[in-house]
Length: 108
Image (cartoon, rainbow, N blue to C red):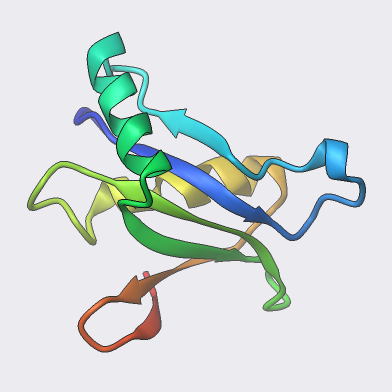
């Protein structure tokens, strides 16, 4: 995952108490310099990015959010970043992305 990318959690369906919520948490790739990190974060705050949802093995919604990747890398390896994080954090099992052409959620 060499290319700078960032994502945000917009909904946390796991947290029991509000103070445990991860909603509005931004995560950027480690190789994003400060300027790139700021630009990606600003774009996510403005509502840009491709919507995603993370589900556990029983089909329960864990988190929802948006991701921004470099042009031409949509649907590729970088789109697994939220799932890679959530597997170790909560055990999420699959990620779905909103197909903006069809309006349908699709498993990646």
